[in-house]
Image 1 (cartoon, rainbow, N blue to C red):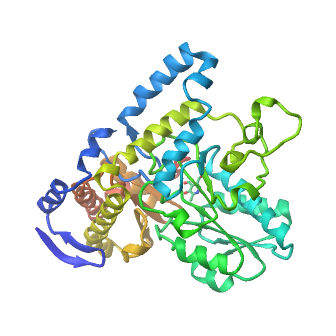
Image 2 (cartoon, rainbow, N blue to C red; image 1 turned 180 degrees about the vertical axis):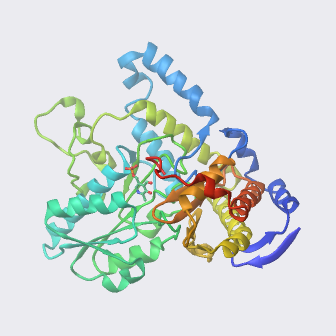
Image 3 (tube, rainbow, N blue to C red; image 1 turned 60 degrees about the vertical axis):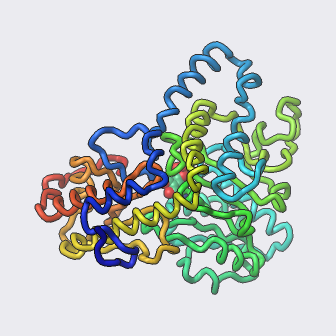
Length: 431
Ligand SMILES: Cc1ncc(COP(=O)(O)O)c(C=O)c1O
C-alpha cells in the first residue's frame, strides 16, 4: 500500500508496501554480495561501508600468494605497481572521468592539500593578484584545516563562505574555489556543474571533495569541466577502514600542476633513482610514496562491489534507489520527528539531496544518547557534534523494509524515552 505523498514522493503506508518495493528493486540481488551482521540495519555506509564478501578471500590471496610466495617479485608479476592506476580507472567510471585520469594515493586530506597547493601555484604563476581561496564554511573540518595550512604556506587568504553566496563572491582575486560536493552534516548536494561554471567565469579553478558522493550518485566531472577532485575510498566505495583516497585532475590541466609532495612515485622514472625530481606526465604526478597494496586490494573489491551495479542500471539506478530510500525515511520519520521536536536539516528537494538524512535534536534531547539507543537496538547511524543524528542510505544493500524497520525503532526509542538510559558522561572517541 502507498500512503500520502511527502515532499520526497509517495511513501508506502505499511511494511507490506516496502516489501513490495523491494520485490521490484533491480539492485536487490547485490545485497548478497556484502557481509551484513545479523540483526543490524546499517545506516552508516556513508561513514564506513560494509565488508564486501569478496574482500576476505582476495586479501588472503594477496597475503598468502602474492606476498607470501611471490615476495618482492609481485611488484611486477602481480600488478602491484599498476594497482593505483588500475583501481583509479575503475573509480573513473564512477565519477565521470576517463581512463588514465584517476590515481589512488594517500588520504583525502593529503590529496586535498596537494590539489589546492598545486592549483593556487598555477593560478598565481599566471596572475599573482589571485591571492584568495574560497571554501564552504560548513565543509568537513579536515578540508578547512588543510586548505588553511596550504594557503598559509603560499601566503594567500582562505575565506570560508556560505555556498549560497559563492556566485556573488567569485571575482578576479579568487584563485580557487574548493567545495564539498555533499555537505557531510546536512547532506545537501551542491550543484557541481553550475558552481564549476561560475568559478571558471571568474577565472578561478574548481576543486571538489567527493567524499560523500562517489559511489552513490552520478558525478560527471569531465562533462562539468571541473578542474580537480579528491574523494574517499572507505565510504560508499566500501574499501575498508582507512582505505586510500583517489585524485583526479582534468587532462587539460594536469601536466601544469606541480604538487608539493614530490616523492619518488610521482617521478617520471622512479627506478632511474635520479638525483633531481622530474614530475611524471598525467595524474601519476599526484602519487608520492609506495602504494599500500593490501589496502588497495581491499579498495578494489569495494569499487567492484559498486561496479557490479553497471549491468543493472549503474549509477542512475543507484541514484534512483538512493533518492527513494532517503525520501522514504524522510516521509516515515516526519511523525516521530514532529512529536519530539527534532528537525530534519536535509533538503526535501531530490536534486539537492545526497545519500543521507540528518536530524537535529534540540531541547532536552540528547542526540548522542539517541544514537547509542538505536545502536543497542541494531540500527547503526552516527552522531555529529553538536546536535545531529546522521543516517546514510547506501542502495547496494539497504532495502525499503530496512528503512521502515529503522523508523519504527527510532519512534519507539523516542516515544518510550529509552534513550535516556544511554546518557553518558563521556562519549566514545569515535562518534
Ligand atoms: C568531506 C570529507 N572529506 C574528507 C574526509 C576525511 O578524509 P581522510 O580520509 O583524509 O580522513 C571526510 C571524512 O569523513 C569527509 O567527510
